[in-house]
Image (cartoon, one colour):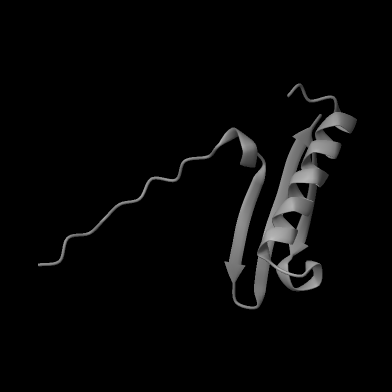
Amino acid sequence: MAKRRIYQRRRTRKLRGISRIDSGSTHGWFVRRYKAGKTFSRLFSDRKLGGKGKAKSAALSYRDELETQLGYHN
């Protein structure tokens, strides 16, 4: 009988509010933050931004800028 490995996802502080989406034809990084009952979200597509790394960098920059605008404390 094959052993099943269970991987626990560890969210690092660096990726808070950012998720990876790889489903069907959608591949990219999804940023979602909440403030005062409102949701702020945006998808950063690998294809449109020139690769997984560039999309991730854009998502991180957007998240940091959004948190500053929303008054989050880093």
